Length: 591
Image (cartoon, rainbow, N blue to C red; front, side, top):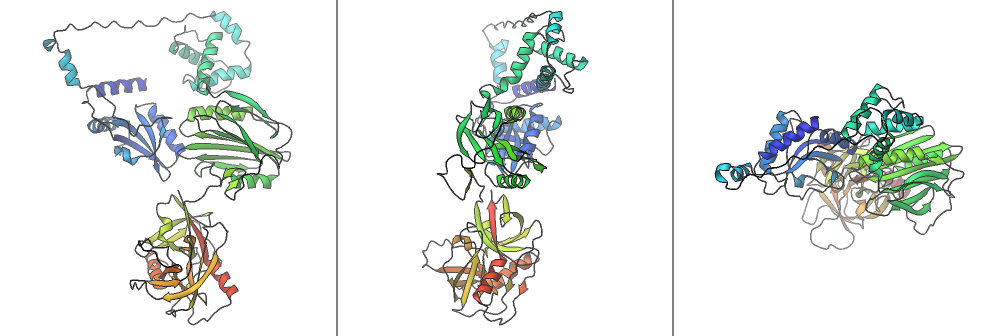
């Protein structure tokens, strides 16, 4: 009833609005930090008000907005809905440019759609005013109310056929009535007063004779409505003998592609970007835990979403603006078996129903997938059993400057990141950034214990002295930092900059942010990324922010770095390598 009243409210209100020209505005009513929260909230709004949409904002945030509207119309709707208490008081007018991909309603793309057109009431009134019209007003015949459909069984016959239903069939009817919005009780397969009342309301809404007892034909129609969301998926019970799994799979949208142990891959065949993986391998709890950890590094499992591992089972749910993946696996009798469903975001009703069918139908057959099954033609360190590993947008080097794990790195690597990590596994936040000097300071979200910490040189280095930079030259591919040796070519930059050092050293992009050390292991500065000056410099020319510049930025972050002892002398290359590598850290920027 609330939705009907609100529909009338919008009809009357829009009938009083001026004609729309073109649209590029929205009424933004909420922003949520996860797709799951956004979808839950959006369903609540959609049950009460019209024109509800969902958009990705980027950075892991999702907007709920009404529209599209012409600007004057949007302001009026904003005032009225605020006044009625239907939207938050801090709702505001937003532009299409504020939004990225639309995830609600499923398949919609309204960002470039003209505003909702509404009638110009003044024109309508003028054209229908009897004083200004010579044409007789047409007589509109009201449409007759549809006649109730006759029952195909008498109440006694319906009760008799109902008595033959199994407990599961009776529970299915309650589930369907709850899905349709007519039943709010427990699924107990008992047809008491609440269930009978819901049956009567469903009969009335579907123009059947209201008896509170569903006939055979009405039960078929109720279940047809309930299962209509699965139409076109061609849900079939599939037995994969190689994987030793029986499960219902939407064969209308996916088909078997290949085996790459421990997965059987079923890939999309049409417009719905869906995938199914069957998981099958021998193992124990350690194997199960390893699989749980590895799967969280894959692109198919976005980082947002709940995940649990308990005893002999785990569940992984990954949510992004574009898709949702749901993985479950169980260990039993030395065999790990499970499945993953990957489905487009925003199609929650169909995804949830499909997932329920897959969970209910999942059964273990004999045997597990042969570890040598399938083809090994495509091999890559970026693939795990044919699945891409999630990779950062950018990785550079950094180095520890205190025992709590505070890191100095290049400002380049922290720009526009949704998430920043140290050594891939540890999240960090920005303490301060000095764009002019190109230096950033990061703090780990949890305390770390570095193997070694930078000690900064207190004396001016000698020209042409030996130096080295420690860094992840190949952005983490090798798994450990490397040392690149060179010489100190100048104490200033090419234009006389006092806070720069010029190096005769051939560095790679991944080395930027790494510590530049002298022959005694004292830190002279931080390697800067190659500057885009529009000039092609000779090979082997690099620049570093000097120790004084770094100390100044650290003071702004409230960090006092350690000082190297004066005239420490040269240390053996092996000791220098160990010390420099121990303070160097991989810094990664993730979308």
